[in-house]
Length: 506
Ligand SMILES: [Zn+2]
Image 1: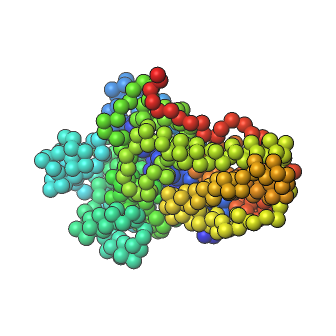
Image 2: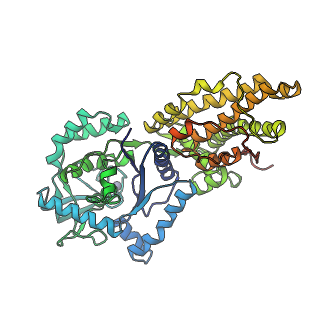
């Protein structure tokens, strides 16, 4: 991969309550961006979606202007991402002038090209989903997505000629069967396309909280406005950042918004002469296990802030990526998180770190010995960095972590088998040095490979290893060509992943 990497999350509906699902999508984007940055330029965008009837209604109910209401809510989202150690490059808000300018400019471009026209919209509207529905799509007269009441609307609106792009969309789907993943989402969207497409109403005359249609005639439909954040943030059309990063490498979405992102979005991009993103990935839903007891002593698994406080955000990040293949639905509970935390992080990785650094302290005064010439245990993991990076960038995070854990297991086993305590007693210094050196170098590699997933904990490990010549998140080509220097002063510290006890206090 030589080109610049661009990853986006959906922009989050400002009035929503931040939950673990939002943390999930954003953490995944963060892992992708951190991984991509180890090889070249990368840009990671997230943000908030702030227009629409639902926001206007909620603000009115709170006795505030929509703008003031949004301004109050944005920090909630930003603090969620900070709590999860997410390092985005940009946070876009659809009420920012830089976004509004682009939306209006896109609209004007479409109007000049004849890709929008004025028509009469009559149909049903779900305020909750901000979505128009044909009568035939309603389920027992209600919104087919959320089951809520729909409103009858009849107004003169601008329509985007989506139907005109149906043949190109079909062609694009058929010749790029990997452009929408997972396969279930691809198949579902292809089936929709095969049914045929209606033009899409992209303005509303009955609403004021939105971006004005240039020249008057209501505001731009919130969904149309929202989609454009992915290009407004990087300065479409003239900013060099746009030419560097577009088309996006990966756009992460929840599967419920696949229709807008895989059908409407590429058509809009083509209409303004731009390319469709390389990949739209529609991931599954996380659900809490039913019947889970959430007593006081167990905290509240539904609150992402409480979860991060309790287990450490890096532990939750690890759990989210390790527990299920990315793309499928999965359920979680505090018990499951605690199990992963205690077994994988506490016992496997945490013990390896603690035993190694303890032995270095006890036998070598905390100083990394010079490399020995014993059996080179790590040589068989020469292709591990490449495997991990390939798996991550292909959104197979679980595979990557499993591969890393083979090394963790091997290193732990080498301690059992080569018994450094006996080597020390018997005065077999060279063998002891060789083993301790390999373990330290193993920890250095683990810190590098696991940093995208657990940035805060791996930075701590890096500090304890005492490496100053390089950062843990440096370009992998540089850091993998080196190894830890003999003579480096390490420090032991407390366990990286303290054991979590889930039984209520006795
Ligand atoms: Zn609905």
